[in-house]
Image (cartoon, rainbow, N blue to C red; front, side, top):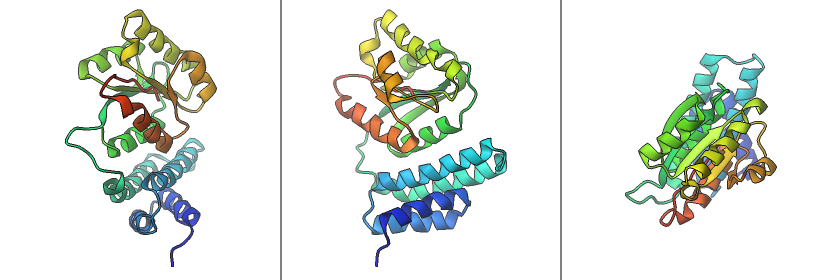
Length: 225
């Protein structure tokens, strides 16, 4: 008899927090056997990692725990990957991703990167404290369809708006879509600065990226997360 969806997803989250890699694998398989949407299962794993980040920020977890928790997340994602939908010979798209200038917090960015990669995107990681112009330059160099930017600091938020302004000033704004994310970011802020997308967490970022890539054949995109 299948368990409730909520129970399986909660257990997936706690498997990540408790660093139980084998359990995460078993639960991911159970989720697929129960007919749970693989993106919902990804959300369960993502929520677990968000709990881990909070433990790290509070001083309860340290770098070694972060590494093991990330490995646990990755093991669960490997089970879900074949169920995320068919993929053509080409990738779903190319994205550059980074934390905007003035911010060195990159745990959330790394989680988004990992989950986007598992969903079939080619990811070019610019790292953290990324100069704003670098987003424009690198997206052009790699032929990106998406540019992903994030920040956890209110003092760095304005950098996202500056990137959008730079795109307009250089006449390339129509090539991209912009999606932003991070602790202080909201849909209201995204709307205010003219970003096309916003996602509150890594699993939502994957779904939003896929929505924006629906018309990839006619346009190019930028995601700022």
